Image (cartoon, rainbow, N blue to C red):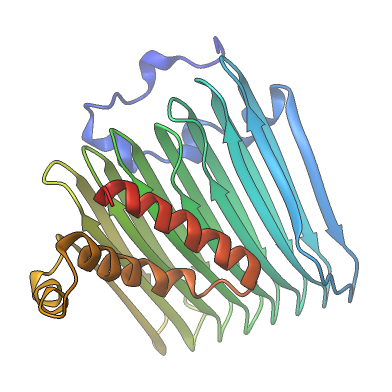
Length: 318
C-alpha cells in the first residue's frame, strides 16, 4: 500500500478522523487504478426483474481489494440488488459503488456487511436519481474492525425519492461509521434516513447525515433520524445531523437519540413473568425491527431479522 502516505492520514486519537471526507482522502480514480474488481449491472428501459440479484464480495488474509460496483437502471426499469460482504483474516476492502437511476426507475438495494473481525471495509457510494425515480436502500453493518459507509446521493429530477435505512450491530472494539449527504437539486423530491444502532462492549459508532436543499428544490420533503442504544457503559456513539436549506417551501426534520435501555417497559414485562434477559431481548428486538420492516423483500427481511436476533442473543447471553 505504498501509494498511500499513511503518516498524513488522521490517527484514531485524532477526533477529526470521524469527520474525514473519504472521497477527498481516497479519490475514486486512485481506487480504480489498483487492480479493480468490476461488476456492472445494467437494466434496459422498462425491464422488470422479478428475482433479486445476489452479489458476494469477499477477501482473504493480507489482501487489499478494490471492488467496483456500477448499477444502471434505464427509464422505467425495476430491480432488487442484494450486496453481501464477508472474508477471512485481516484485509482492506476499499469499494466504489455507482448507481444511476433513469426516469421512473425503481431500485431496492440491500447491503449486508459482515466482514471478518480484523478487516477494514471502506465504501464510497454515489447515487443519481432522475425524475420520478425511487431508490430504497437498507444497510446492515455488523462486521469489520473498522468500517466506513459513505454515501453521496443527488436528486437530479423532479419528484424523485431516495431512502437510506440501516442497522448497526457493533461489539468488541469495532468502529462503524455511516456518513450520508443527500443533495436535493430538483423540486418535489423526498429523502429519508432512518438508522438504529446497538453498541456493546467498547464499540464506537458514528452517524453523520446531511440534507442539502438547493434553492431550486422547492416542495422538498426530507427526514432524518438516528437512534442508538448503548448496551455497555464503555460503548460510544457520535451523531452529527445537519440540514442546509436554501429553499423557502420545504418540510425537513432531523433528530438523534443515544442512551441506555428504558427500565420502565422492562419492569412492566418482568411483572408479567419474563426474566430480565427475556424482557431486554423483546424490547431491543422491537427497537431494531422497526427499521428492518422497511425491507420490501420478505425473504431477505427474514434473513436479516435472524441475524439481528442471533447477535442480540449473544450480547444478552441468552
